[in-house]
Amino acid sequence: MINTDICIIGAGPVGLFAVFETGLLKMRCHLIDALPQIGGQLSEIYPHKPIYDIPGYPTIKAQELIDNQMEQIAPFHPTFTLGERVEKLEKLEDGSFILTSNEGTVIACKVVVIAGGLGSFEPRKPAVIGLEDFEGKGVSYMIKNPEAYRDQRVVLAGGGDSALDWTIFLADIAKEVTLIHRSDSFRGAPDSAEKVFNLASQGKIRLLLQCNLNSVHGNGNINKVGVLDKSKIETFIEADSLIPLFGLSPKLGPIADWGLSIDKSAIEVDTFDFSTNVEGIFAIGDINTYPGKLKLILCGYHEAALMAQSAFKYVFPDQKLSFKYTTVNGINEF
Amino acid sequence: MENDLINITVEDQEGTVRDLEIPTDISLSLMEVLKASEYDILATCGGMALCATCHIQVLDDFELPEPGDDEADMLDTLHNAQSDSRLSCQIRITPALQGMRIKIIGAE
Image (cartoon, rainbow over all chains, first blue to last red; front, side):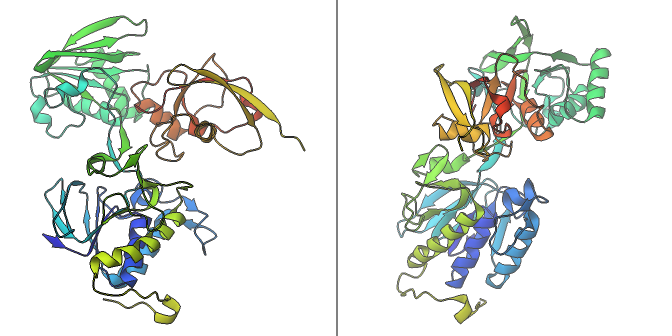
């Protein structure tokens, strides 16, 4: 079990700056992030894009900002759990928290700071009535073990790279592969698209273009999917498995189930200290909302600074907080 | 100096149709205008063509600049995208939008 003063969920720029602000007050931080690297969307999505509204930097590339922030917090020796998502949050009688990740990592802390940005990226589910009833009963949104599809009748839906790649891969394993795509062309890698067209012309897969997944049927397990063609006529395909691959979309995920007050996928906070309705849990950065909220990195930094002042009383209940400037006091490594 | 104004017609998720009058010098995306007009759009990603919660359909074959790669890739992954689907965050407000009719699809 990891023991820390503050567990920060999200290792983006705002989560990293929270390490700095709480570090000045001698609080130790552990960060956990669903992505495999530090930096949040800055490193994952736009590492080379310039940012123009960081005070003191007329322009700075997103990844450079993250690298600089890592250097800035080095004196406080934060620890990290990467590539794992917090699934469960438990509040103990003494007011402290136990967090458990999807990989079983357990973190004990006195304060939880949610700096989760957009949330975590989860598979986008098509709006097909009854689809969720078959999840785990033939319907899955990602392929963990391709062998599970050996000798099965598999229907894939989607037109991106993963739909193309898995269609090609499963063509050799499954008994029957059908790919449904809404358009008549693919934007994925041209090589993969060509392979898929070839497999279809050789009769090794069934390719249904300009078609949409429309219905799912089964008795316990899925056994049939309905497909709508461009003239809105539905045909049915017998299937043991359905794999909708419609990309990833940012979602709050398990955070939504922790009793926090939420408005339009954002956590409501008190602007006094960016505390949530659950004592000891704060939310800072893009994931929170309040009147006048601006989703800017620099606003997240401000929120981190104010949060740290309030978090102090949970970590050091017997101590009095005195505010000090870094210009006077410097950075005291610990 | 008086602002140039354009009118666009918006149908929301409930089917209510309303005209919006938009100044063209505001330097906003259509998503930002729709949000400011209190339409129910999450815009989780804030305009980076990442979440597709600002998904709209552009009606009547209205001519718009082609989607960029980010937008086209995202539209391609959407289950409910049609040939006239766009992400409103990627559409800048310009005088060329005068008279456009759109339908909000929004989040899945």
